[in-house]
Structure formats: C-alpha cells, structure tokens
Amino acid sequence: MLIAFVGQADAQSAPIPLWENGAPNAIGKEPQDIPTITAFPAPKETATGAAVLVLPGGGYARLSDVKEGSDVAKWLNSLGISAFVLKYRLGPRYNQPVPLLDAARAMRTVRYRAKEWNIDATRIAILGFSAGGHLASTLGTKFDAGKPDAKDEIDKVSSRPDLMVLLYPVITMGEFTHAGSKKNLLGDNPTPELIKLYSNDLQVTKETPPTFLMHTMTDAGVPVENSMSFAAALRKNGVPFEFHLYEQGPHGVGLAPTNPYLASWAARCADWLALHGFMKMQVK
Image (cartoon, rainbow, N blue to C red):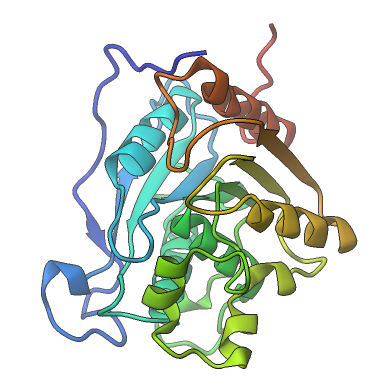
C-alpha cells in the first residue's frame, strides 16, 4: 500500500511557541531555544475530534520534521484526525529533562486548547519516531495529572497521552540503546540512576497508555530489542498494545511511501486508532 496525498491542501498553521515568555531552562532566544507546535487541523467535513501530537526523530540532535513530521500530520488529516507537530529542544545544547518539559507542555497545550481546536480532550495521542519515540514513551511513563495550584492555567492540565504510537523507537538507555540519542539526551557520563530513569521499558506501569509499536528485525540504527522490551513490559503490567514486527526494513522509513511492504504499518495503525475510538473502522 503506497501512501499519497494527491491534491490535499496544506492546512498547517504558523508555529505556536509553547511558552509566551520564554521556555524554562532556555539558554538563549534563538529558534533552537523556542519549542513550538505546528497545528494541522483535520478537514471539518471529516474531522473525528481526535488529535495526535507528532514527535519527529533525529537522535535528539536534529528533527526529521518532514518525513516524520508534516508528512505524517497530513496522513493523520486524511483519517480525519488533527495533528500537532512538536519542535522540541535538542542536544548537545539541551539535555534531559528539557525535551520532556517540551513534550509535556505540548500535550497540556493541546488539551487545554481542545475546545478552540474542536478536539476531544480525552482523545489525544502521542506518536513518535526513533528518538521521538523515546521522548513519546518518556512522557507516556512520566506524565502527571497537572498542578492544581499552578499560576499558569496550562500547567493545571494533565500531560498523559490517551494513546501512544511508537515507531522504531529508542526505548532503552542500556545495552541496546542508540548511542547518539543517549549521548545527546544524557550527556557524556550519565549515572546508572539516570540511565535507568530514561530506560522506559523499566518505567512502565499499569497507568501507561495503550500502545502501538512498529519495528523491523533488520533495523541497524535502533535495535529491535528496544520495541521488544517495551512490549514485554506492557504485557507484564497489563497494558493493551499492538506490535507489528517486520522481517526486513531499514531504520527511519517514515510512512515508507515507496515500499509497499513497510507502508502497511500505516493502515494497521489506522485500524488500531479506530479500535480505540479515534476514527471509524474502515470497512474493506
């Protein structure tokens, strides 16, 4: 199945800064210091009211913001789902917990402004590729319910994703990690405690959101053990999940528009989103 969006309008908005008066822990005021979300609202005639926060990958050093960002947002729009692409702060300029602060703020912002964007605040998923999958799973295991006494109204809102979609994700900071992601996120000499804290297969609980996983056995960038260990942790904790493991395929395929074999993950993901009420199940 080839993915295409022939004739589809580019409905994205201008990037929206996540903090009006500067982000916490900001080193400067350059674009790299200003985390943003870009909204891609679903067409009104097909909108389901669901939304997905999209986190591109790039090893915590750059963002694959087209192949794993705007292209994915447009695919979600074709399903009637609104999308928001996050530009989070990157290493080596920013280490943990700054990317998590950005992801949490983005989730809170979308939920806080749900009515304005015609979104159901109880149907907001997070989707991440590679290092973006690590950040998505970090939020999915380290979310909070919001701070009732916060001065900022957005900070009062929960940062928990309702669902997670993790695509060839970095999960562990241990044996099977992606070395570049680990260095950019944790620095040159992370403590054993920090490595454990950001090994998200060790942080799963029964409150972790239901999850969709996709990986390939021949991924030379992020070993398949990352997804396998996360799936095992979800199973152990009774969290619903769906795991699509492909025999062949490289790392970083995005929607795989020229590979009919790998492109099938998008249709399977759409079915799974429908199973969880994000859209209507397609009748084939």
